[in-house]
Length: 475
Ligand SMILES: *Cc1c(COP(=O)(O)O)cnc(C)c1O
Image (cartoon, protein in one colour):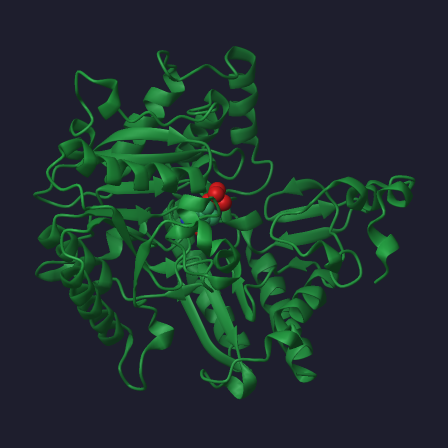
């Protein structure tokens, strides 16, 4: 790699836009030095269902749904049409002081679909933001300010979050995240959070099982909440799957325990379903999978529910925070000081609301959850065929997410040396064979658009197996 590689004067002269990119674009979550030699840029011109199509017309399977946003396929015509119709009618309006039909209808429909627990007042208000991190910030600020507004417990200034959790990149969201790669450098800037052990089943002791480990993690959380009694305003977690943390999955019994502990301690439970919401793990929301007080599947209802990513079917940025009436009422006052004075310019953008409504229509008309159940079964079978490899330490699945954890000789305690870049080698192998398989470190995963078909699933399995073989054979 030479210093010249990134010289704008030279790159800007190039005759194709792929090369011009490096003259002017700074890519997200990327060490730019790795482009283009170590990591070739993939130039995408079109999308079609689960395919991305590059500038040479080559089809590449989008196995990660474009950072987990896409649900029904790229360029889905019904969502595209809804956005076009909305754009000709009303593209944007200030949501402070004004409203529009899309914001109202989307709020009504999300509240009707939201997780509900018998005997608990339902989620009843929707606050809009324009990306996932902003939604997390909204939820944190709401929980904190609710106690400040009440005035009798000013010491409740801390959040509890889970080890290995992820909630976004802005400073507030990073403060409750626990992935060192993203957090470490900014640590001096972050507000204080208390981290509880992760219920992650991968960390279970030999013979303990996922549920046993989740119970242990809940016991540890109970101690932590006791130790910080009166200091905590809310707990935030990703239900069922810590996605950015490596698609680490936990037993849903943990959610039941957390709901009960938050009630006992009088703190708010924030469910971050930004990645797992909208059918990704088998139910519309992951919170629905928690057992009831007396067993069976009953689901839990959070006090604040953050949604984004798939909310618009993957077409436009939008986030919502669903809140209980109790939370909302804590801000009603004669004084503006007690109001929630948070805003983003594009709050509740009409185009994004139109896309979200069209996506919800597709869930109903195409019975997406039933289709996902069948697809998830095929993913189980195909993952079984891939999973026998000697370097795979774990294969795990939650609905439409399958993850393969690679390690030295398949031993959970013996991760590959990160310098080997095993995941990156797998990525390069796969992309050359028509599958975009962006890893999380040495964890490969499938999180495809829901419209993925049998032939595409087989391609995915075949290329994943080849990528694992190629990446681990020299490690
Ligand atoms: C992606 C993600 C976020 C952040 O959303 P952005 O739109 O990328 O800011 C927050 N929480 C979880 C669980 C996520 O996966």
